[in-house]
Length: 268
Image 1 (tube, helix red, strand yellow):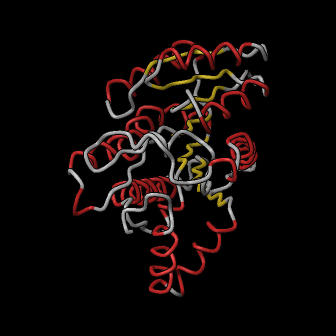
Image 2 (cartoon, rainbow, N blue to C red; image 1 turned 30 degrees about the vertical axis):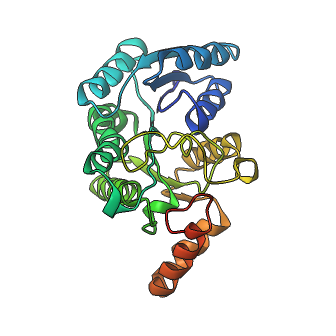
């Protein structure tokens, strides 16, 4: 067998960047994609320190043409696609009543449609390689979170899409993995959109107390190797998953109370 190829969206920082380094150490062909070319170049240099072949592609996953180009460049350079990690994502934090609809649309375009576009164009090659499609989701895809209506909607949509894809391909040896990391130290909350679509600039959480992107990346790689279907990482995420099945109204209240205690919560 030849060298395997992984495609990682949102690879310029956070979980995506950490995944790039993990796969570079495993000597995969690593395709890194994001909107920021300068940040990608920095990731590319570090990947090459592990003597891994790296392809850098500037890509806005909300544009289908960019996603198509990403996969075309991958195949042109490496002839195969074994793992697609749909990691690119943006968040938002605003009460729906105060929120411009363009904010919801932007979040859906990146988180949901970005996953759909990349998966659509990579799927023929992933079926050929009997590879893995990954969606990096969130506990917001398990339970609707207040002040994150667009974010939760995008992650619920991602879950439905990927579960349907898995069932369609039960006999095709395609692995579909949905990952719910829980709160992870990353830039996603700093760059979360407010009700007008501007970055909120400051995270409402203590990032130092959260799971590191490196730990999340390590666990994702292990789950891909094991060909798992779901990966719930945090204790809170696992509890939320099970308790919400049996006590959904109680969980509504507990989730509201937790969010209302965040720094600068919109519910105060």
